[in-house]
Amino acid sequence: MMTIPRFWREIRQRYKGVGVECGNCERVYFPPREVCPHCRRESIGKMKERELSGKGRLVTFTEIHEPMPDFKMMVPYIMAIVEMDEDVRMTGQLVDIDYDEVEQGMEVDVTIRRLGEESPSGIIYYGYKFVPVR
Image: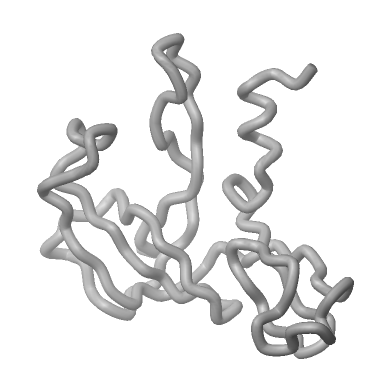
C-alpha cells in the first residue's frame, strides 16, 4: 500500500515538471497528454516523457485579492502564465517578489513549494511555483 505523501511525490508533472514530447513532430506538451493534437493518430505510441528545464519567461500576471477559500491566508498573491524554454505555457503562483517589481518578459525558474493541506489530519502537499531569476 502506498502512503499518501509518497502518492503525491509520484505525480511526476507536479514535482519534476515532466511533460511529453511527440516523437513525430517533436512538440512538447505540459501537462502530459496521450495524443499530440497536431499529429493526432500519427502520434499514438510515440509520446515520450520529457523533463522540462524549469526555466522560462513571464507572459502575463495578475494579483489576486479575492481568492478561493483554501487560499484566503495568502492574499494578495500573484498568479502568472510562464512560457517555458520548451515553448509550453504553465500557470502558477509567482513568489518571492512584490507585485510592483514584476515585469512582463522577466526570467523565472520553477521551484517546489507548499501548496496546502490535503485533509484535517494535516497532510501537506507540494507543487511548483515560480521565482524570479535575480
